[in-house]
Length: 318
Figure 1 (cartoon, rainbow, N blue to C red):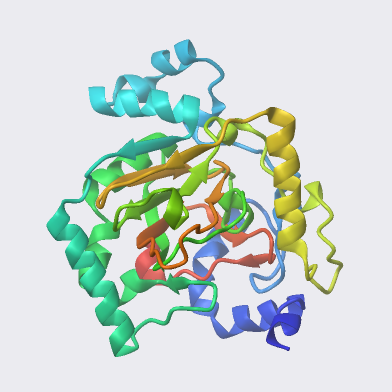
Figure 2: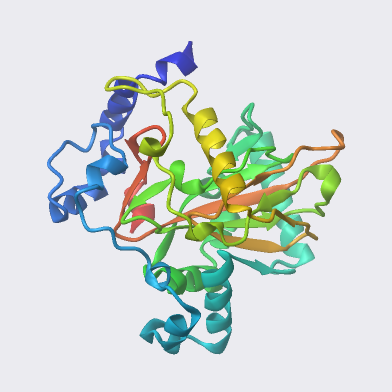
């Protein structure tokens, strides 16, 4: 019943009205871009189709030589320049042992404590949402300066944490780009990190991704059979989207890569990198991990698939 109600756009309008303060930061941005509609109304990429479509500076670049000559690249540190080249070509970065063993143990203990106290809940889809909002330790982790500085340099905007997801087991999620679920105008101002909180191999359902897929056009609602109408969101919209992504992968012959990890390893990925979670071969295995999504400062943040503005507490947005 609840899932059926969620297909009605009016349910999100009501939710927006009840959470006015969490979407209020969009008001000056709507004015800036001359978007004449209430903040509470449904919204998707077609609302912005008549506007300029700028991208993060590195996404506007066509060649490696152009990247190396760009002013933003030239003012980077040497290590950031190396990261920028890999980001430009592949759409992700890997850092081995970014967090040490002690830090990993602290994170796992903190998540277990939050669960036992009832501060967070593990949903049926295996996701624990927004744990960082209930923990000083996790809050400091997602705002770690070297992470935020790097992602901000790659996008050209200060990146702000929006959402965290903790997993006990592998997600087993089909291939997708995060931008269908967490979208921005201008496009591309989303980054994400994936923190391994234990060893991950084939048996535990590893994260997979398709290097270079970030440079494809974004797949939005109008690019597949969404199944919705003026009043409702298609009840199978996500499945139809994932079918479309499978078509895109096959058409472009992308090579599938896996993120096999030791505890503390870190992956950062681009807003449009296609990725997912492999099936769990050994059902007794866990795959403890933490994902954090970041939005760029001063961009409109919304959810393309469900056509609603992202709820962002004012204190966090600033």
